[in-house]
Amino acid sequence: MRLKDKVAIVTGGGSGFGVGICKKFAEEGARVIVSDINLSSAEKVANDINGTALEVDVSDSMSMKGFSEKVFSKFRNLDIIVNNAGVTHLPAPMETISEEEFDRVLNINVRSIYLSAINFVPHMKLNKSGVILNMASTAGISPRPNLNWYNASKGWVITATKAMAVELAPFNVRVNALNPVAGETPLLKAFMGEDTPEIREKFLSTIPIGRFSTPEDLGNAACYLCSDEASMITGVAMEVDGGRCI
Image 1 (cartoon, rainbow, N blue to C red):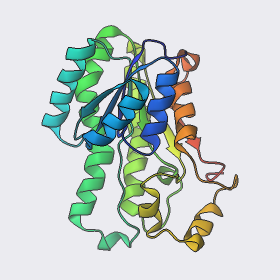
Image 2: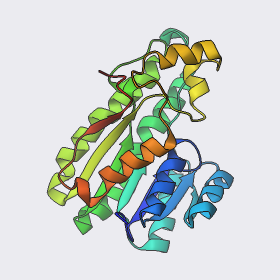
Image 3: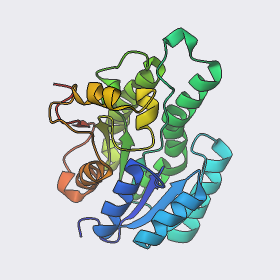
Image 4: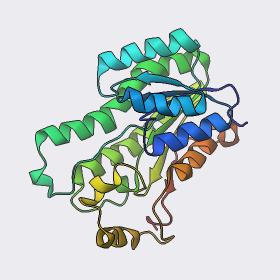
């Protein structure tokens, strides 16, 4: 029960790594707010873990403002934010990615963290307590070809995490990130372009431990970084990558 009675938001909690994080947090005693742009997916996860499902578009300022108001109306407090929601563009040469695709990647992977900070950091600063966990990627430190703008967005997340950690440390608010390698999530096919045994084998050949990451892997790592066991850890981008970045 490392997160007993903690109130935790997990964005993108309705699928992929978000599901693993929500489940682990609930197992460890947290009161989990499963937030997702797809409310039905969020409700399914919330029902499984006795959590609360809320719909939100993390890239939209009005949606995030309304979301934060619902959170504070229901819970009055907030201990943990996991900025997990993310997207990618299909593999292609950088100059062929459309403006629409570029904007979508930057809005969901980057702008969402800015909007999260606007809406929730003042509460944590006032309470002199809180943990923020951002979902970065191995792509932010060891970029894959033809995923240029996705790589860049995750590099931004890593730098933002470190900057946030330094600024918020005097308020006893810790900020860390996770760098997962490609995992068994809905985004896997998008990273690979197409899902074939040959392409999977090519991806796996870059991961020394020989498998993709799982939602459970990310849930375990997130739980540690968001628990009091990690009270001296801030500004870290932890690799959950089976050795990919070595």
